[in-house]
Figure 1 (cartoon, rainbow, N blue to C red):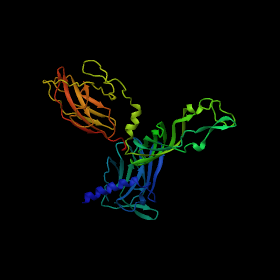
Figure 2: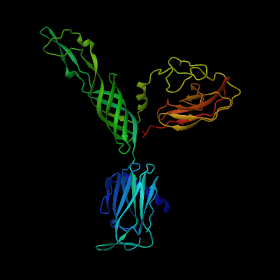
Figure 3: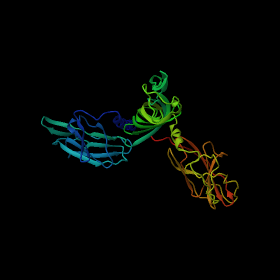
Length: 442
């Protein structure tokens, strides 16, 4: 029970770093600044009122940067100053005190390593059974054990995708032709113009892990006239659930033919000029609401993937063959247009188990053991199930494959067959893979 209480105390002590501002009060001067690359922190030992007191302070520190803690009004001969480096959330130890010293500053310093998420400075009596008294101008004061807990704020950059709805001020101008005194004039009818334009878009939000609620955002969308629009702006994020984005929108808007301008004083030469309006790229302000549960990744990739980005080839030793017409393009995956295992080989054993030694939101790296007598391997890939008759067949010579045709949170089923000059051996066991979500939950 005591061990459980100690673990809970450590966790609560470190969690307070995420919610509290830097410690204030008479006991410490907090973080005093950065001097020649050093992060300097000061604590007044005389202000520690009891043994075992703990003080928590959040710090921003770079890898290799020197951290310097100055303990003012301490007795260095009677205390030890030990640094505990915290890979996870280790607990502070709580040792005891001893008498009569002249208080003076004592500096403890070390270099930060990014593999540590925090540090605990244990200031404890060398003789735990004796109290320590500090001589002051008003008499003697007790000096107590304490722990200084330093939590390193997370760094790095996160990326999240989301789909949402846009409201843009980028609208088409409206023109009309009026008759006056037997002449026709081209005018702009602002009352007939839309105030806003609605659309849908997929957004990429890029944010610092230290402030994930604020993001720089880029979006690709389609408006109500089925035209492509581009968005860039700043977002306020609600975790991975959604974001409110405000920024600038670029897209296509209607324009008059070159050299033609609306005028109520000069008649237009051609009354049919509005039958042949061109377009130009314009920009205006927008705001959008995007939601993380809408699959924006596929929408963002689609405009950049052609029907057939490149002719697929076979590595079966028969020479390169083009992919079947209309076959979906698979980046970095040579798709065999015909079944490479139409014939079976009685001399080859079944392929062994496939291992996924690396899985990220945009690729799955596979490897397997070689089969005796095999000259190549046919990898069967299906998003649906094992032993799928419609599985994509990819012939490989090496005993590894990097599947880049995946999206976050996709499912993949992989099976392997060894192949020689006479045909393919039996299928090996099926490997089921769940593709991870993008960073940050993102």
